[in-house]
Length: 623
Image (tube, rainbow, N blue to C red; front, top):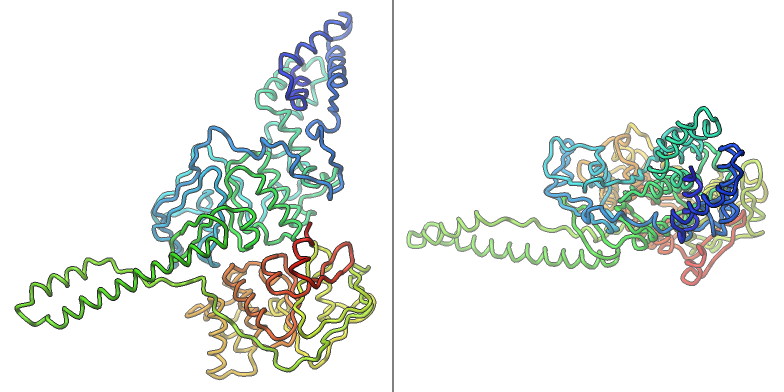
């Protein structure tokens, strides 16, 4: 009859045993006059123990001994009980074993005898070009994608539990409040607790209540319920937000809720499919901290180099229908991949030399009877040789050169007394802000801080609330977002670009277009594919090419790297670095932004500040 209060006490006081708390309860219970009703006696015991052991059952048992407030800026992952981040002792050391996997989708061969192992503490970044099969592989692991036409095996450890964070977040019900969504993590516990609360004070239902109480204790229900209700405070959510509909949350907040659910479910493996795509830098850093605290396995698709370096210890690259495994971070992967390429090229070259040498002998002595035996022997040797394919160095980035089509004035843009927003000021700039012809400006800030609104105001798509943005009329602006929105979905890639490239529709013009597309790995028959059938990353490449063909003086890009693989990012990075015009780029990819910028416009609390010393200031901006 004391189990509920005993369990609550043990959550807070791990230095006490069950027997010690039970003895305290019984000793006080024995002092209560026998004429008092049993129900009242139990309540008095609960009240006494709560006071004696400093329990606050109505507020925050799970949060005991923390200094958190409901202010989102004061949350801390470091105060979450460590056991939630740790793995199960009984789970197999090998969680996933993929052997000789072959997978085809239509005429596309994704995998040929591919292999991958995931152990219980591995933190693996799964990388590869867009369309190579990364998301397909994850879906096969969790059972959402079959392999009827393929072969090979995907073996999962017995009782393996997986938390899958997809690009499209999944909710139990889109009508749920945040509180309801969290309680549905343990539906059986929630159902039993609700019934228990309804009947526990009814003498006619004490037998059912006692049974429910025992069942809840056996399934650790009280602790699970408390954790489900309180865990989000560690993630920076207020009590008020717990009553929000889940769809009211930002993309970053929704991601936090999903990983909080995986945390309290104590899954063995986190699978993250491009988790940083819709996060601002603050959200990315939060996710990095979470992954560092996570002591179990992670398998993550990511195109964010800094995120990979901060969260993963191994790289698995899908390339040429195989999965190649590398220890270490992204830079170490590049070194090892180059070594592998050098060895494969050497082996291929040596084999080609040997084949050529043998063929020379065969051709020279084919018709000489005295050499017939030797010739036939060499022919058989060549037939038995397993021919090596010439390796491709996919790390070599094809350079796309883009130059401004005219000389620029020293000052190409002047923003004076500018306030931007819709109905009220979202962002206030310095009184006068000049953009020089050599400026490569990276723009950062939280989601919703006004970055995109600022770009729309500069481009003339949105009128300023006050002040003005002065840009020389003779200068041509290339807007990535505008081009992306204006793509004709019915056109093929090559037709869309030829139609828009009015400057040169000749054979030379098409050659130029194909060369630029080739630099972004859109080549061969791919250029005849209809735009509506392309992936998000492929459409982004088409839009980028279309914008560059206009030969702008100023390039304005809002999140250009979303949906792009690392290879395509490197192409864009080198293109922007070599561009002799001015660039304004909004991005949350720190590695990309630092590489292409010589100034940072940081938006915080409605104020824009300019940082000119990138090397000195960059990392401190996010502390």
